[in-house]
Length: 322
Ligand SMILES: Nc1ncnc2c1ncn2[C@@H]1O[C@H](COP(=O)(O)OP(=O)(O)OP(=O)(O)O)[C@@H](O)[C@H]1O
Image (tube, rainbow, N blue to C red):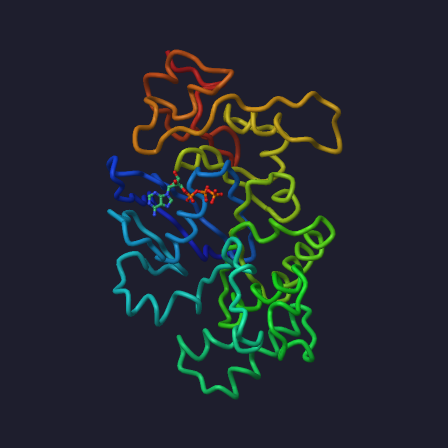
């Protein structure tokens, strides 16, 4: 059995807003094993990025509180002093490819410098060695040495995304969070980047958290899938169970709302929109939109039921609850 490299226990992130506290991430718990890819899927605004940035302790200024526990290789890191977290954990043990990062590369700095920068800034590495390491990692992600001295505007979208991946890997992390790493790319480039991520994972023995709103993309990389809704993980299971035997009303409706190559079924959009995270609905947070809603769903928050081996869902469907 592979080691657990990352473990979250009831991780909760609350922001201060003018209308009151907003719980962007609520009691999230999961484990990530060495070499595993856990996809986190859900609609825009369900808290995926807040979860990802929260794991790296990159909180916005209006953070009200972040509670729970985050273990990295067995060490609890949410309670570490920021200095210690920055020195020993962030970027060196766990790093992230940020959503849209390829569009925020610095236009006036050469690629090699941007990839080397974390080594110079965070780890005090001397410039020559940092550039050497940056060139090695650039070549690993498929950017030829001759491109290292170029500027971002001289690169295609796919190449810029490779640079951003190199930036996340240059510090030798073993866990990488990928936040929508292929959105904004054309389908061919998306496929190339997905292939690159698979090769890197194998060659460098990485573990991934792969965040996406696109369940078709998730299927390509994921060993397990966690479904997020209104700040919570509502279902978590091995990938094949997610696709073949979803157990939460939201997951069922999500799967019915996207086209697949295998079936010609009629697509059904999920009615309504995700709820306010300042005043979420009572009971199950999905109940106002759920086509399978029962009385109990409106009144009582469902616990995380074990539906099957390694398969959990916060949903009363199929449960006796009288
Ligand atoms: N700094 C902040 N202050 C207040 N609310 C915030 C802040 N950042 C995010 N939110 C809110 O927290 C909730 C979760 O947002 P988050 O960006 O984490 O979701 P997401 O699933 O990643 O969405 P997307 O895919 O669109 O990025 C949303 O309601 C969002 O409006």
